[in-house]
Image 1 (cartoon, rainbow over the protein chains, first blue to last red):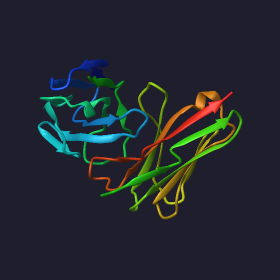
Image 2 (spheres, rainbow over the protein chains, first blue to last red):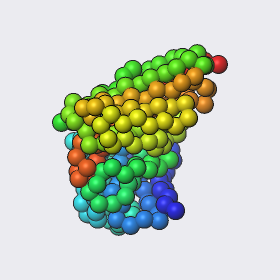
Image 3 (tube, one colour):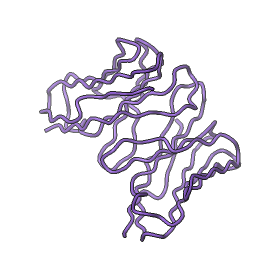
Image 4 (tube, each protein chain N blue to C red):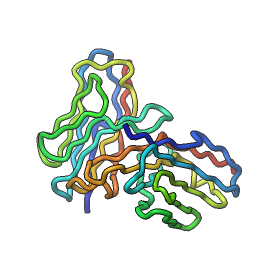
Length: 115
Length: 112
């Protein structure tokens, strides 16, 4: 069966520090991968998605970046965090290919607090 | 760009009362999905609707997709405390585009 792992689960980072959140998917190949952000009590904002290795689409201009160095690995990074980057970050995957109709499976999420 | 609006943002009900959340898209959708996020948890898939006018039921939950495929609703009959959480709809405009657009969610609280 497929599983998705996301870490770290929680982190507190000072303003201006770098960020790296990592996500891996097991049990499937060539998945579509996604990074979402959820501010406290708010909806899901799509940040990045990837349909293949090295292919990253950015949805919102910001100081975050994403990379997909391997088929089932998705990394969210920042060189310098802002206070507004605080939130709940969710990695997600769905069956690969361009068809969007398949279920999205979310990781457990990472709570980021920038202080 | 595509927008998916969801109302209400919050709903407080007494246990046993019914609950409905509505999802409206600015454009015709290919299909729509519904997810539930428990407090402190991550969204979990509930159901997908594909056909115009489609109605699906899961126990006390009834999902509808509008005839024009631009709106959808989730209705819960006789809410229970286990129904608390945030319900999201996710609209898919282009099935070949690789992404969905989520509504902002409706957060349901149930008073026992």
